[in-house]
Length: 386
Ligand code: GLA
Image: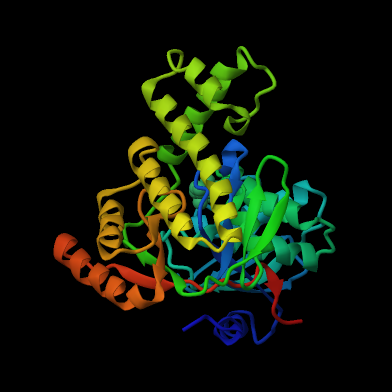
């Protein structure tokens, strides 16, 4: 069951003295392929999902935000002029977005808001981008901002960098803002160019298997991967100054700095170069309707993420093996890693067997349940009511 406008409106009315505001929504995302390529100037291939965040918002004529998290039953009031802002992460996202909008010249005022979401937290489907994009889109609309969609995505990304401490790329916020029902998108993170690819694979389904290992990007492991990539870029730059990101590096460049960087950094960069190539190969395969090649590339990505980039875990490796044993077309860890879901491209006739196998085998091996999430590609950030 999906979250509805009424779920949010009824709470808003209760918490804010019978008044109503305007309702906005933004989704979480999946990513078919192109993982950890965004902050390397590479390609990503995400799509928005139907699950997301819904928020009701009403300007309150003060300089304070009065926010109620419906899911956490938590209320807090904080000033948009206070540099520090709230500590609780769910309120910090809202504060960060408001501040980043102000930095870009939007005349944000205080407001009352209630919000709720149905993106499973820690699943790697980017509940945080859904929250950021909802407020970025909403505040731009309510306070007469003139920011274009890419800038709204950047507001969300800057919120992660400056208020949460995750040095993420642009993929999640891009997908959440630009999403279109029934389409995946290929974004070139170096140039900002993007293209919609209708996603209607005849005979196949996409399904996520949530390991329910809560993925957490705050802290060092994610930023640490990014540092590795930057170390390699620095080494290449020494003899090729025009290189800005790993996207600009050739395989030969990488080989020529092999002895100048650590073994770990080298392996991670090798994964990234391979992943950039794989996204392009997947685009060609999709154009030719060749889903078996798409699937092969997904397995290759998993191998790289697990062995070279080292962002997998035992549970996710296990789920990919279950997929392989069942004859599933493609399977890999999705998103930042360290937990969350695998994304699987499954032929229709295998779907039920695969899902049942995952449930039984996962339970047997880890003594806990995994969760099945069928993927439906939905729209990006939008207004749901006046
Ligand atoms: C997280 C980040 C994204 C991206 C992915 C990995 O979701 O927020 O920017 O780097 O990890 O592809």
